[in-house]
Image (cartoon, rainbow, N blue to C red):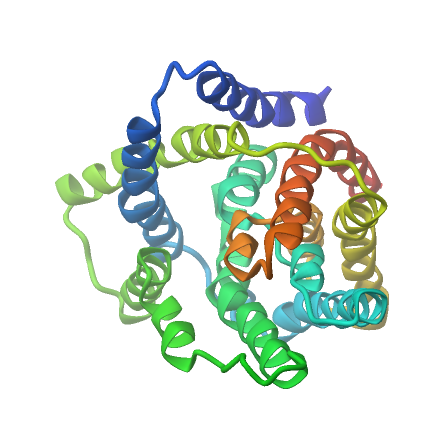
Length: 302
């Protein structure tokens, strides 16, 4: 019952967003405006408020990052090797199996399930999420592209550090570590803006899904299974090999790995076929996460 109480609001808002988009109740321009407000204002403020008053001692532990990113790298490399061998060319399939939607799904899920104080572990991983995995993909494309046409876009990768989400994390950490006081009325504004982040983020995800179409294939099914089952299983297994984190931190890491594929992987699609597969994986993994996440929550509760 606790699991259902946590997940029904999350996936209920995603479904509502999908319905509003599919029925064109919210037009495309409204979708774009909501996305700008969500990603450039509400979510950065939420990240700022979460870090500004969090206990950063354990969140800054290298052990925390290793327990998440070592499995992520394993999934990325193995999936890319298998798909590359099958297709004879590089693809973004490894990225699809290892890049989680930790902003639109992870933050609301962990907030509802574990409380806002647990977000500090997610924030620590999120600070490096896009930079590390997108860099891996860019290096892979550059060295194994086959035709030598790919180049590592270092400027673009560094620019990813200047996006509003990372700025929100940076400023929140700065306020926390420097002990900068924030007046009560200003903090109240921060809290009001942060409160709007979760529902708008979930509605945004649903609106985005309304534009995708599901193309069934074996590759798509295997990638979805790798994302929702294999990746979180490896993160859970790292707990046995590298103990030392709290149960709460372990739970956050596994739930992050168990989140569906993030929408940003579409930026690395290589051709129409890759775009179709990636869009299908994003759609199917989000739908199937409504089934797999409760299972992971039950496993972690033991």
